[in-house]
Length: 116
Image (tube, rainbow, N blue to C red):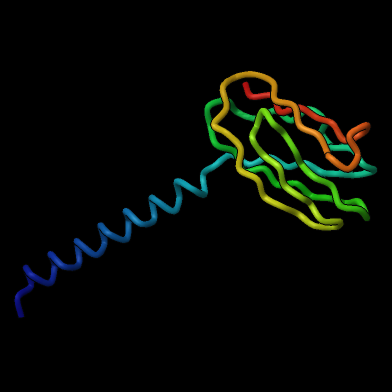
């Protein structure tokens, strides 16, 4: 048995596994933020996130009616059925304020993402 060959194959497998793990970790490392829809309002109404990073935003609709997360500035539009959660990726964003609203309750469902 050629132990040098076996050791070389083992090291290559270990290196490949480490590289795949690093790639998976990079996606798992996205900052996360949570937004709740309750009584036809977004909570928090002002959501602070880190600038220049992609963010995983989870929107949980606790109302009995559907709502939509919509923002022209963020280029996002996502229906959130009643009692459910959706995930929306936003960014990376330059520092600033980005308005969003609920299309079904525009008078009350308003908010802003603040990238800083």
